[in-house]
Length: 298
Image (cartoon, rainbow, N blue to C red; front, side):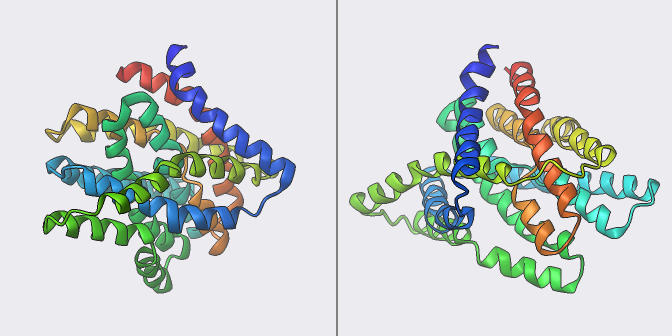
């Protein structure tokens, strides 16, 4: 109960605020998302990569993310084959289960649970997951040549990508940023996590409780919230990584479905109702599963 009150409850209350405000005022989420994507997140990403020493743990993070991604995709393909699902339905299930909400859900949970050291790992993972989701997520949503080209274009349009590149260049050439300029970036970066948490709550308010395909939803819920962290546990055992990073990766792997996947599903007509439904249900149930997982990991 202590973990729930001190870690999970504060995060869910911020989501609830966004949810209630959206139900009350019906705000244009796209405007807020644009601010978060093009201003807030790049500042947070730049600050993290500029101030955090990079070591082999970040290489392990890349290996972990790719292994977990392909493991979940493989499980979906086998399940879709057994159930004789269409290509569209298979892609919808992959969108619903292979991409976790490591940004506006995972990062604040990690911050409350493991402090700033864990949060630095969480932000780096958030950037990596965003790149992976913008490539593979778009590919599976579009499933074809146009999907690949759109995926590459999406990655190159991400402001966070250039924030990482700039931060790494400054570190590589040992160029120190003027303190007043860094204070501006730091100030904006501090606003990122609260804003994206509110946006997630608002996104959940837009999902309709209609036409749920419960058999498919429960498959997505179990794979996203239970099997994914279990696979993550075995993956981290294969690498001599920092124990804190191992915990961050396992907890991140247990996060609910990324809300961005619902946008891709709508854009490319890849089972949008199913993807939105799994996004909603995994987010609700994760309040319990994340609490239990944090208690187990300590």
